Length: 77
Image 1 (cartoon, one colour):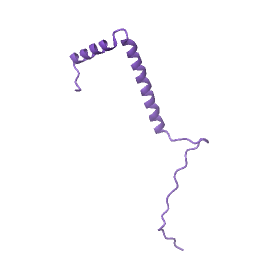
Image 2 (spheres, one colour; image 1 turned 180 degrees about the vertical axis):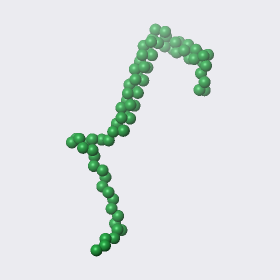
Image 3 (cartoon, rainbow, N blue to C red; image 1 turned 90 degrees about the vertical axis):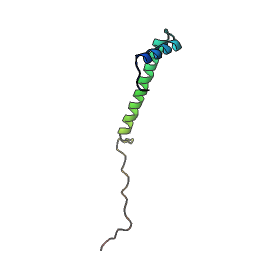
């Protein structure tokens, strides 16, 4: 299924032209291109948000969680 030869590509092109018509094909391709551009930009923005730590209103990084203490520790006097 992953191997598309010249015959398969020609057949796909003929079907696309029959479905959309030769006049609407350029505007359809432009619309698909714009949609892909928006999609890629959204994905890139989401990746950047995941990489950056969140900043609070004062501009400080959020405080780390408090350290856990063990209750079974002995204190020597």
